[in-house]
Amino acid sequence: MAPKIFVTGATGYIGGDALYQLIKSGKEYNVTTLVRNSEKGGQIASKYPAIRLVYGDLDSTELLEEEARKADIVLRKLLVNHELHHTLVLTSLLAIQLFPDFADADHVGAAEALTKGLAAHTSERPGYIIHTSGTGILLFADMERQTFGEASSKIYNDWEDVSEVISLPDFAPHRNVDKIILASNSSSVKTAIVCPPTIYGRGRGPGNQRSHQLPELSRCTLQKGHGIQVGAGKTYWTNVHVHDLSDVYVALVEAAATGGGNAFWGNEAYYFTENGEHVWGEIAKAVASAAHKQGFIPSDKVEIHSNDEINEMCQAGTLLWGANSRCRAVRARELLGWSPRGKSIEDDIPDTVAFEADLRGYIKHHAAKVAG
Image 1 (cartoon, rainbow, N blue to C red):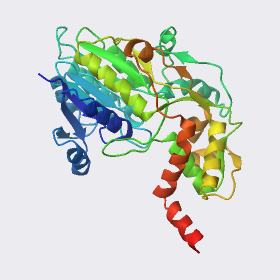
Image 2: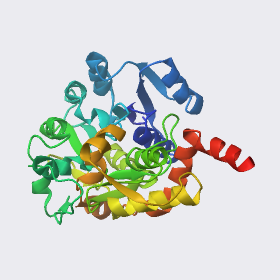
Image 3: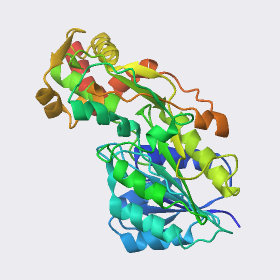
Image 4: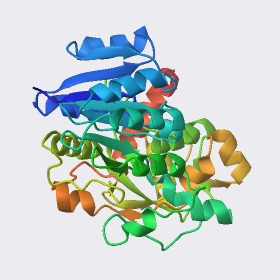
């Protein structure tokens, strides 16, 4: 019997791309997705007619618990700030929960309902939950100090120093739900937490294909007519292409579907997913340069804005571009054979700028201006 998978967030950026890669893998799964309305359902049905749809949202706790109970694997996906959380459940006598984006990584009720449903499994047929948190959990130090735009030398890893990651302060972003997921680990519920950093690249899902941090920086640059920088611009973040991120989810699902595979599960099973790091001040310069070269802004200059101005342009912009989030992804490489190969965030900038310009009508206006 094909594993049963329950998915939430399949029309979101992370969840949609993960679902695409999962289907593309060619493995046989019985997939059920949670959708909020007929519009979202239609997006999935038009691309994946064999997928079963259930209608509700993250507040539909009875539905979530029931579907998790029936699933072998539950993938719960979170949204990227402007998105809602997504849950992906894969079922085959395994249950995996996946939290791929930011927004609903903090939805306590959904986390509790899904883990409660998975707890109905047995030690002979455990449920597997893959929860997506995010390296926003590492922002807590700059948040506490209120230092934005300055560099930090602190780098976390998910292998030798994972004890630091599982003992972060309770006020760290996403920490409340991460603790619920970790506490649910038992002989009948096997847990893993995926922590994506800055995600970039066009998604391949049926709904939203736009990430958040880099597109929002591009949007603000286009609207202001110059590059945008927080403080000294020395802040570090790690990054990953969305296609490489999806490979981690697929590898974990495949491991769960075979009884755990080579993956590590449990209350220390954090998986960072980085493929390099960047400095936001340098990214701001590159975005401004790309926007200028494409004719959308008058020069490539970058201006420093106050924290209040940054947060008016973009919600939590001081955290997105001004607080440090540095980590190393050892576990996925060592255990899953993960080998990211997507193009770099720097190489993706011209395409992201062009996409944002087209999305907001700049290309049409620019063409009209050139035509006279």
